[in-house]
Image 1 (tube, rainbow, N blue to C red):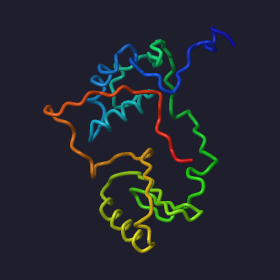
Image 2: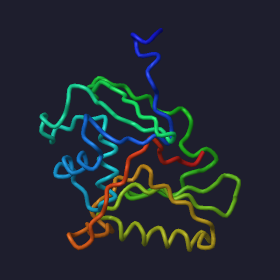
Image 3: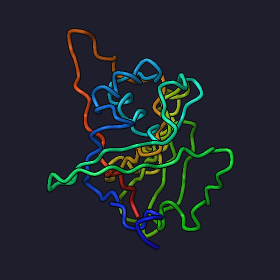
Image 4: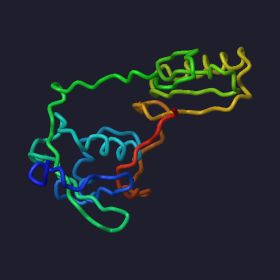
Length: 197
């Protein structure tokens, strides 16, 4: 392995900032792709743009993409470097399912379209709410949740809400910013949201 096969190329580390994508600085990249991202909040927009960085979406004009994904990054030290990655056909990819349970030590006690409720196996006064969506069933789902919590004596328990797999949705979202409340794009980083062990 050597420089000719990329083994000596710089590798992104947690905390490195993505400052340009395919030659476009992040503000320009966000402005270019915003019309092609369905979103209900500015935070949802930034989340989806960051999530879709390695993808070539079918609803986006092909002319907005390059043949490869080129990311210019900056380390906390100020050092800048570039990483070039291929776009892959997702149809040919196999994503292995995790063998370990997502929340070891917890048991699912309630499942709804918008969320799952899990309780710790050791009896700690704790509720883990895995939030999945905000859709038409939301109001009834929350009513069911409150009735369940009251019936099972859970209202005084500590609550952890995991929204890392939430798809957002059309219910309960705050309005999008207007020209009177501009929002600046945040800079994507290589950091990711962590889940409970």
